[in-house]
Length: 202
Image (tube, rainbow, N blue to C red; front, side, top):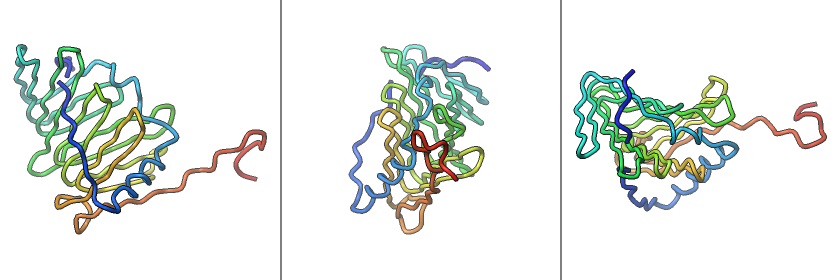
């Protein structure tokens, strides 16, 4: 697979969630607090495959179109079209959009665990400088633990900050949940054994 021109960061727009949305965001942050996504991914090389590519060396911009797949460490992004940029400081960013019949998708391994985050939306924004991913319009984020779906949240916009390990989920007209609301299902974690108890179960 050819190596893409490394990715200016995507501007982060301030979110002003309506009342009640922050509660869902806090729940999401709590369910994912024990471990972060792979922190080394931001420093890994970016590779891509697509039906076609347009490379602008002056603007440090790659426009990939048709069955696009991007990998960067454990990160995998699939979309109809992806714009990949690189800032003068070497930071990479990508804006991925889905096609008429499917949304763009994102997948990343959780550090030190057999867990994966998977997201899908009409548009995905990834920024290696801020170590964030944003899912926009009909957004869904899922967590798989040992290959089994454990948690799922949906809304209009989902933002994840890998550095602070915090999710923010916002409802709206283009929410993946009914009536523009935020929805989620959270599976309880296995209890963590206390020191000296010899295990979490009798």
